[in-house]
Length: 123
Image (tube, rainbow, N blue to C red; front, side, top):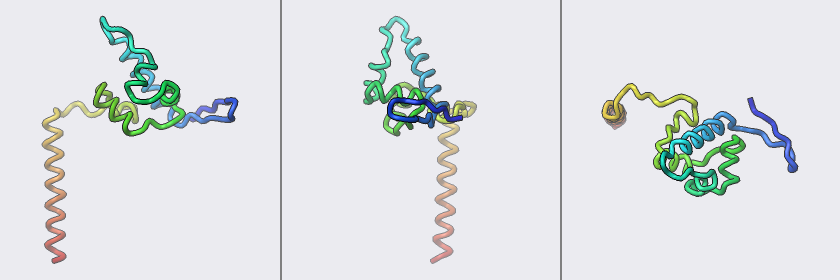
């Protein structure tokens, strides 16, 4: 359920509270796993995402959507499972990467064959 928060400027609605909570959980888990290294502050983490601290806090509080470029960086740089972040469930890890790739190639080949058959029928 959307949470309403009163501010000096008016009423703000948390549009993405679950995503914000998962992003916050990821950040604190990441921060705690910095074994032997200096802990990463929210400001530094936000800077690495190319956003200012206040904007990162808006993402964590669920007040605004996380843009694609930030999601891509979280996924590529920190190996964050975007399926978990957005939907709350982990990606299917039962199939190996090569099995998933083979399945994707097979699906693409099937689509191409279907399109070829349709092109032949219309000619």
